[in-house]
Image (cartoon, rainbow, N blue to C red; front, side):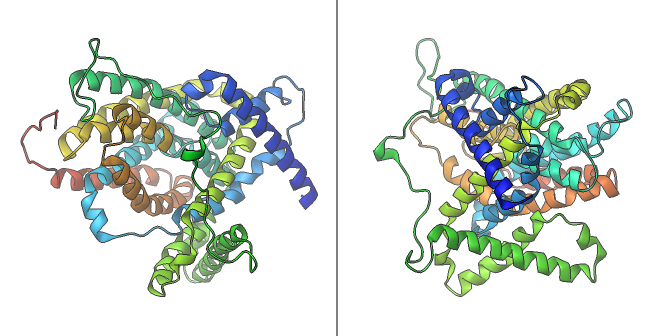
Length: 448
């Protein structure tokens, strides 16, 4: 591929995004399902592409972006994260609840994947692990991890991941809002204790249109003089520098430990970021790192990954495995719903119902759906959970991405080991959360 062909394909992806933005603005169902513009763009591209209407040609190479851009996405998500021992202790109940939900999905997703392959023998190997990438992380991670499988010679997991992610978003909002409504009526919602005559509440709609000037926020700040180097390029260069360091570090270690050579490339930047950022802090040069700009770069890459992957999906493949996909999504939805609310009730000290709703929304959809459910419970922004989830996600993300990096190799080279990994991590966090729960053997007040 030449840079000109890449440039032309970027133009196609951006036109799809602009059209999808207008569709999302005008068609309420897309906002009510909290589907991001990138997902709508991918669906639109799929419909007008050769597999459905055949109106335009969607280059197959659009789907190849994920394998490369995932490296940058993961590095940006980790760069600038401070792992503080005091914060870990303060937010243990939320961290344990979130990780229990995540790793239980790896356990029963991986197990169901192996069992269903005995019936549908041509299912792609490792497809069950896509559950945790899809439900717990959303379209971007699901697509990117599916591409990792493709690089390792297994096709079809991208399609599996996209379908699971879409179903996850739908059940996150539909069942999540039902739980919110039920909890408010029961008096479990700490900041919604005053009910109307019919016990109803106002649903929070997804944002649309132009952001009012007083609510506009910066997507980054200048850390160096633009006369010296463009600030966006400077932050991008730091991320690419981490990629460079991480790649050569892993190549060096691979000379002595052969297993290191099997670790996917997206782990390179994560490890480099975790090593180098504390050094930046010690040298007092961490002030040069702008997390807002990093988040903008990451979000830019995620949207491109999603558009390319969905627009080039193999619909024939999806139709062929519709039944096992529905089975695994149904099981995951029921188990996750029951566990999250029951475990939060007995282990979370404060805002147990708010934490349960947020974690259910996040671990079935994405962070945005978790926040949407939280907003419905806390319309005035009084909950401490906003800070708690920010710190908790910041602490957990590097650990989660490192584990994600190991899963494809485990599923393909040591089938079943990923199931034991999920079970082990689930038990670990479940036990820690239970030991540190606020009261032992005493039923907690649901209205706390």
